Image (cartoon, rainbow, N blue to C red; front, side, top):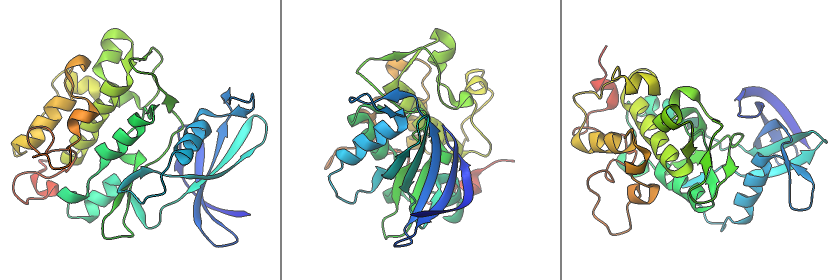
Length: 278
């Protein structure tokens, strides 16, 4: 039913390969995952499958400017599952998209906070939002943000705390180091700041280096970008804004932190690439 092609990379639970559906040549990605839990009927199912099934079941069928990739089909082989997922074409990851667009992401095209808020509204904690897990689908006039790789995701209840860290360690929030626990909302907001920081600066973000003040904001960044970074990368999780507060309401004047909203735009129309220091 499907043809597997080349390896795309490593997901949270296993290798991911490109492929296509034989009957109509629809581009797909194929991933093998290890079973972790059972569904309501007692059938073995991974958390990743459970989350993607929930997202598919609650989708309204509209074409949004931000959405996770869709699970098309899955196959149960006992302790292993094969996931067949939508593979947006053409699409590139966030780093590549910024590079191909002169070093910046146009203001009206960045919808990462929308995508993260969509998951939060569904009570889903991605846990590993980073540039590599963000695809920009470029096949239409308005590029779509697609979050991928739900291998480390989980369902979340309000105010749930986690005492085992899953994600990319160098991006872990400060509270993990100080309290050995973290929560969904503040962690996701921290990740928004990390993604923006890396888009605006040469080199990778590292939480430990940031807390030791070894990482600095570029001096040419606009006040709005600095406000957004300051808010998202606040050390104390209780004082970080929520995704709701970062999300601009329709008809509302965007100012302060909201205007930055991962728009990746700095002073005037200068692209990020021109502001990087050696």
